[in-house]
Amino acid sequence: MCFHTFALSAGCADGACVIWDFDTRGVAKELRDKGCKAAITSVNWSKCGRWLLASATDDSLSLWDIAQGTKVSSMTLQQTALVARLHPGSTSLCLVCPMSNAPLLVDFNSSVTHTLSVSSSRSGDAAQNARMKSSSGNPQFSPSVACFNKRGDLIFVGNSKGEVLLIDTESKQVQGLVRIPGGALIRSFSLSRNGQYLLIISNDRIIRLYDILLPVNGAAQALLGMMEEEQEEDELSIEILKNRGAKCLQYSKEFQDRVNRVHWRAACFSGDSEYVVGASAIKGEHKIHIWNSKTGQLARILEGP
Image (cartoon, rainbow, N blue to C red; front, side):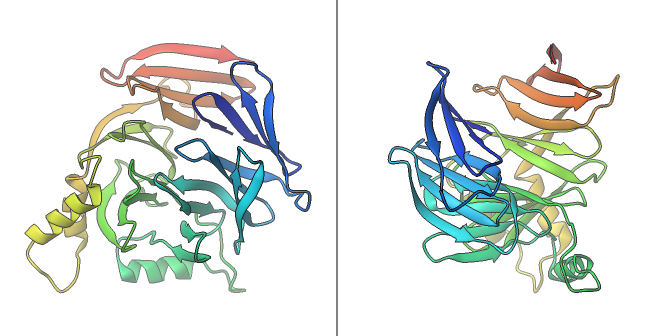
């Protein structure tokens, strides 16, 4: 399910994507491929609102023209995508987070997929890949998440060791590293609309808020400037990557339910980034917590059936 300014889109179990209009509360458009009945796993709007990216359980990835109601691009991946996100400035690039592999950067124009690193070193990548293989050679479950920054020139990748990797979209290389407190598995990211803040949900039942210190415009170029100021070394060390990461992301606040210690299913910002919203579901209770992002104080709890 995904919101745009005046509409809501959702993927259905029968392979259709339904779009509702907020004004009329009715169905404005239904996107359906008659040859595909696989359940939709993820939907994502383009920034302009004209395109919709959808992934399905048959390993397909489809880009729809909403105005025309037609599919303009499609690809078949090697495994099912749990989350798919379009590049903020291009409909030819998207990020895909599969069920049992590292995130992928997918190019619709060339039909090329590039596997992004989930480790801060090359040796770590080899060890990670070895752990991801079972005795039969098939990949095992290794959760990782990814999202673009505001302009799409950087990618944030979160792994099971509680690390956030900063990857240059063009070079596909890890340029920075941030370790969240506690080192718990990272479950999801949420970027504020202005591109200045990042929310991280981890397995320790805490939502963490980070300030993005890089400029909204030219973040990758600013990171490249940091690299040029450093002394040249034969090999990138973890400490160098961590030092760069500290100049890119700054830990600000954390949000949690201190009484019930619930797991958070989702988190996001309000449109003006003044509030942080966390959604939980436990024992049949569905609650939405709303905090002031500046003070960290709980503003309200909304309870529903």
